[in-house]
Length: 489
Image: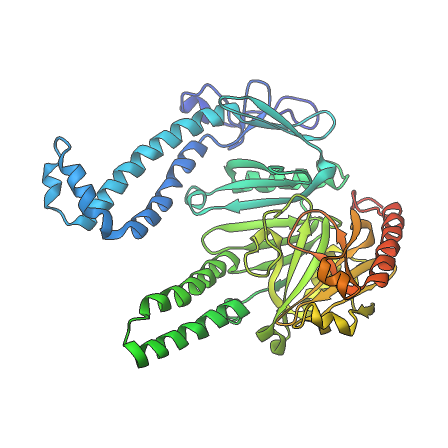
């Protein structure tokens, strides 16, 4: 890649020559013959090493059940008859290890050719370009005005080599993410700095903005919040009942079912605890910086103006503690996540657990004009209990000059909101049951994500009127939106 003054980059070392690749390396950033940057030459090895943790999971899942068959197969191979004297478990491990070694070699070979084909650079228009493809060569042009977030992640295998992956989230359809695997952690942060500076409309030489830590989620609070979720607590209570009933009636016959009902939620809790451990939120001029992860460390930057909608999620057992989780919809990010509060990907969570006041403060930093504290709410009519007997009292919509919001849920409450300018379409629906009760639901659509903004089971005349008013408010909001280049006055 040429330098910003248009001159060729100065070579600081010749690691590529030492590796026999005939390529010069300034520091750890490889540059090809066209002046385009490449990921680190050690990347194929990192990809190969990543195979082994997955194979370890196979060994644990496979256990001794497949040991006998592997022992029989290995004993037929020349020179491996002596392995038949080993235990089935050791034979299973040996078989998986051999398979992992062969698979690693195949992965390393393929990734070597992928590494040679991959390059990236900023073009003359300032956009980010990536060229890749082993069998089918392709080149992607990423418009910086459409960038939604830039993340630096360190999977376990990458951390062993002090490497990192850079993920650039772009507003678009499926597979809109750009991934660079792998570069040194310093290089990843430098690329992220330049991408964010250009996307903000600033000079590419702009130094990385300082940050101020706003909050950290303690391990104790995170663990308690995960255990107190409705699904987790419910399954654990169900497990206790199954064990008690089984013991009183048939001894321990129900222990198998108890392991499923009790084990699955605990596995989910442990996995999410590892994912969000050490969750830290910091403020910087280029947005909120999120850092989290025990085994896989992730650093994300959520630029101002890129968040489309937010959702305050309050499970039943959290409300006495005043806790909430904040989900966000960002264009092109986390479109595979469900709208429930249980399976969100980490890239749709602004903070996994926080006090309500603290959560609102964080939301005000990514959507300054959004304020749900002073909204006038219109509730679903009393006859809505026939359509939704559990949550009808909590169904409502509200809005002001800048914000539209909805409330729903009784066991797990949701307060979802979005600025008028983020509205992409407005519609109202009326199913057969709603039609019989003279009810209707209105929906405010934004980019795909975990947040659903739908006013459920309103009076039909009100739903139509609110939908029309919201359509007009969205048009006015888009006319005054100045969030694309957030750093410019």
